[in-house]
Amino acid sequence: TIIIAEDLTPSDTANLDRKRVKGFCTIGGGATSHVAIIARSMDLPAIVGLEACALNVENGTSVILDGGAGTLRLSPAEEEMKEVQERLIRMKKRREEELASALEPAVTKDDHKVLVVANIGGAKDAEEAVKLGGEGAGLLRSEFLFLERQTEPSEDEQYEAYQKTVDALGKDKPLTVRTLDVGGDKPLPYLPIPEEENPFLGERGIRVCLNRPELFRKHLRAILRAGAKGGLQVMFPMIASLDEFREAKKMLDEEAEKLGQDSIPAGIMVEVPAAAVRSELFAREAEFFSIGTNDLTQYTLAMDRGHAKLAPQIDALHPAVLSLIEKTIEGAHKHGKKVSICGGIASDPSAVPILVGLGVDKLSVSVPSIPTVKAVIRRMTLKECKELAEKALQLATAKEVRALVPALD
Ligand code: PEP
Ligand code: MG
Image (tube, protein in one colour):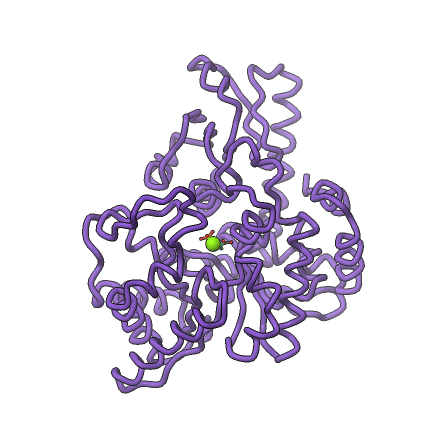
């Protein structure tokens, strides 16, 4: 069955019966809205931001949902069905090949290694990521533990969740925990944020935590305890200026001292253009960078990431976003700091060569995408990637950039 709905909450989506539901379409949302992120992590074909008339499709109609192209074909002819079946066979074959080499590293033909790690919500995802060749986790969305409940998780509950994730990844596979990223489109019932006219431009991410030191310190302690044996680093979301990083880092170090342990490496998410532009300044103090292209794109283009009508234009391959990625990498590398990309674009096979060409060190991708992203890297040389990136930076639109690298069939 294919579900067509006005909208789905993240928990509706996570609880879909996978035996019956083969894909879904929603009228609301954009490609990086949270329901789309969950669909990707479940490897479930989906289209968001579909025209409202799709709700009128009669039950029982046969359809072809193409999540890659974002199209829903109604009552396809037999010929078309046959073509799709053949394409599915080709995709299955390619997937088998990718899975067969999933545990090998992602090295370009001219010997340039790119780390491929996973975006995860907890220990279960971590286990799956390791099976699929993930070399660690580059983004643990810590807020999942806080969402859809009536009370705040205790320090011990948080610690146990992070510790389980560390254990699931195993030794030698580092974990990057992002501190609580709520506000915007992720409200918490027990943490009221006064109504805002523009929540995405309001109290979000690190701003929420810095304004609630008690909650933040408890959260940091849980993270520190899980990181006591190494292999864990922390990053702060939505950083716009250096004093926010300094304040958060100070609290982290103070809590480490109180616990009588060493602090852990602290980095920033680059998702506000201000941080990308000033990356060189941040690189003197932050240990690493992770570019959140979902937010970086919405803030660069001034387009709400969940806006269904604007969804086709909200593309992280827009040359302006690529230029900010380039700037971030340049500033970070000047001080020997590594840069990862953890936004949805890192999981897009058409984008991967360009991102590698821009000089990114690490790609943090949705769990099912790990084998594909590694396979794409192995097919290219770094030289080819650099040429593509240079060309992309000269273009005017995301559409032109996409035309540079054909999508996988
Ligand atoms: C991002 O903004 O790209 C990101 C990875 O964070 P989230 O999608 O959770 O906002
Ligand atoms: Mg973000």
